Length: 157
Image (cartoon, rainbow, N blue to C red; front, side, top):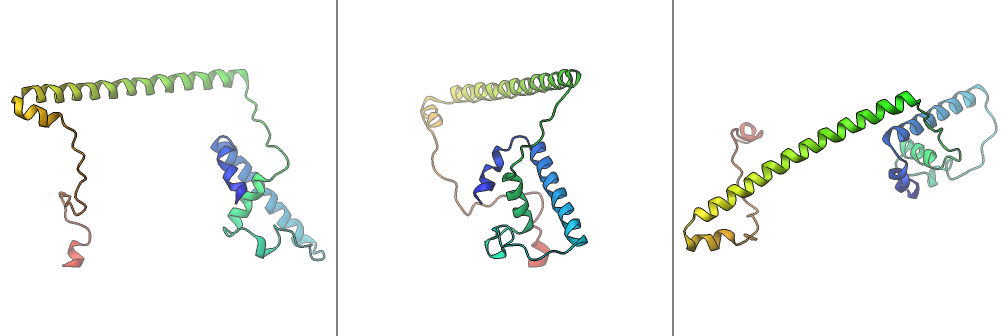
């Protein structure tokens, strides 16, 4: 289980998938070799002993095997041209996300200005109450009204 905690630190999702597929292929190759020739019983190791195996079954064992693999995964080498294309894609993505962020900030600022203008339009007695924070929790049995009845409405009645 400790090995799975480090799974988040593997790197990118693609790298984790590559490692997963590589370990799966190794298991399949081992299965073919053992099917061809039967040998004597293997000594019990934590991986072979069912009592010491992870509770998650084959998938968890496979993930643990990936994380405990002695060989480091092969480094993905990209050409100069591919690196330029990837850099341009990343820059374009950053520009678009920044534009979206600016639009969101504009809308939020506009809503704050409208709120302040509405508060200023109130009489003096109500302005104080409008500026106070409402920290009262929502009622837990609050009814949320929708356009359609609940799914179980026809079955329940």
